[in-house]
Image 1 (tube, helix red, strand yellow):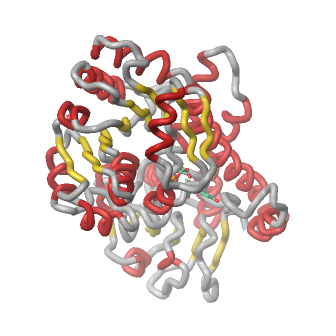
Image 2: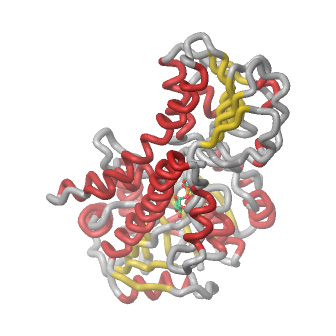
Amino acid sequence: MKVATIGTGYVGLVTGACLADMGNEVICVDIVDHKVEMINQGRSPIYEEGMQEILKRNAQKNLKATTDLEMAIENSDISFICVGTPSDRDGGIDLRYIKSAARSIGKALASVDNHTVVVKSTVVPGTTENIIIPILEKNSGKHVGEFGVCMNPEFLKEGVAVDDFMNPDRIIIGQYDENSGNKLAELYKGFYCPILRTDLKTAEMIKYASNSFLATKVSFINEIGNICKRLGIDAYTVAEGMSLDYRISPNFLKAGLGWGGSCFPKDIKGLISYAKGIGYNPELLQTVLKVNRKQPEILLDIARKKLGSFDGKRVAVLGLAFKADTDDTRESQSFHVIRQLLNEKAEVVAYDPKAEENTKIEFPEIQYASTAEDALKEADIALILTEWEEFQNLNYEGMKNRIVIDGRDIVKNREGIEYEGLCW
Ligand code: UDX
């Protein structure tokens, strides 16, 4: 099929590139010229495992990139809206980008027949029906039904998004009508996972409920970990015992500094704000958020007790990305730790194998080391905040005091140092 994807972030580009790799003709649209040029040269503007190879195989063949959205819609049967829906001040979602994309798509639909628009961006229940469809109708002069509409949430984890796209556990097709759903199901016929067909707002809610549940699972094991810490019990052994129950599974039971990223915080805050807006107070979800916010404070309490105070102390912060194997620092828990260290007048030396550049935007004033060992030199304490493999066996000899606080249960060699785990 002929496909257009609007937005070339990790959802849009992964969707477009993988569909091209499966034999579809794809046009990726973005407003940033530089990104468009890179994609057309077969170079990926984002870091995702496997993306470079896919672009090399398909760029300028059945995968093209352009800034011309109208041309993309006129030359495709189905288009995916994959633009960002960031949090706004009160935790709700900011729809400006998706509204703008819908306006442009609507204009193009005026001269296009048999086209189906698919919302892949994460939007609260009711958004596709009550906001996106009216915009498409207004700008195309057509009624929905003359064009198809679906809502098809993504479940892609950063760093492994290509694998997640090509091997989904399930595909959710929220459909305005049977025809729209059939069109999207046709595109996905190469997948062998369960395909669930629902109405539009149910598909929107499945996305929020899934991410909120995963965040809840992590905050749950962190709460258990905080209790275990007081009892000298290792939360990881508890998690292992729990995970043998097939209903619990071993996934998302790693206790530690908590969750960050561009999705969990945004989605759980979005659902809380939306629920309150319809008159329901989501107490559990608010507590999940509160538990997560507390983890950096608990780690700092452990460190502060060791040092007495951070004032004037040299603190090596190892790990800045919100998780390992990505350069993404959005909502990284490490940033909450650094901010508090600076408030308490610590001298911060930071290191991360991939996320230094992104961190410098937020914290230009701290020192950055090019290796973990350099960051440790003369440090009074080391805080391990992201589970990078290279942090398993570090050499702490250059430290002034060999105090190591591990926020991710990643440190394997604990000999000859004063080691303390966050929840173990
Ligand atoms: C998440 C969802 O997994 C994905 O399905 C959705 O489409 C987008 O949001 P992502 O944000 O890329 O993906 O990262 P993920 O691997 O889910 O981790 C999220 C956060 O939880 C990270 O900060 C990670 O460090 C933390 N985490 C995860 C834990 O602290 N413990 C765990 O056991 C798992």
